[in-house]
Length: 176
Image (cartoon, rainbow, N blue to C red):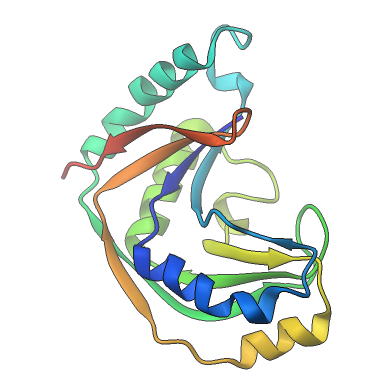
């Protein structure tokens, strides 16, 4: 229903646009580029059928103590990679690989506090920015061979994404 996302840098969007001609053979190309940090289901909310604004307020209230004690951290995109056998959906999934000790630390703090979604979070978590999915494996392999200039930025806030409405629903600043 909701996810806590790391906002991506404008340079990431520019790189995705630059790669677009090589992605056109895929059935689904992402036009919104996100980096999911943690997913939240109905179990976080007392009344799962209340309006979305109630859920956003609850999510902010529950996550804020962790965010306030988290210093801004750096993220680095280093290369293109694939999930040849994704946890869910069609393959291959082409993505930008993410390195960040601070991201991992925050992910584990959140999964310790709220639980981990099986097969997607905790030790199975692979931080990434999806570019496209469901295309020819040889094209995916060729993209993985392509070198990219690493992109680095500092994360100072987290975004709340409402999957039901497919839109941003708020932000939570990091403290530290």
